[in-house]
Length: 121
Image (cartoon, rainbow, N blue to C red; front, side, top):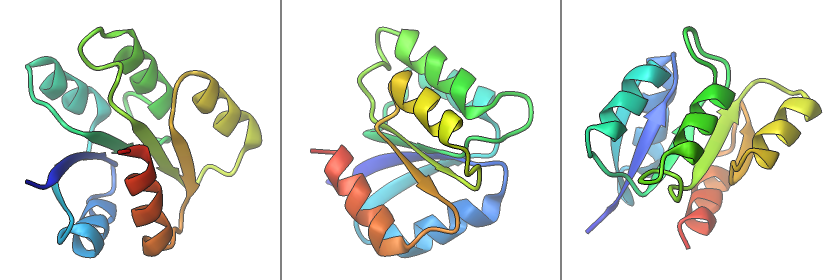
């Protein structure tokens, strides 16, 4: 059975691109809004990994990460950020808050695949 990845990005093309590259290995669920994704998770839906953008309208990746890590049922889900935000302070704050990895956009699909595989171990 394939592992399930939740993709959260306000640009649907990113979700389509990731799905295109990795659909042979994983199943996906996509949300363009972090709050909708969080509510979906709180309803009892499960995933093996969360792949999220950092800069999104309504709720940024940091706020989403804090909510996930404070939820007893969600806190152990690995979270990887994919973002064009090339700011060391942002990356540090996400990693300190519990993110498992941070990958800059544009990303290499093979690198993404390897980092996902590592986070799922």
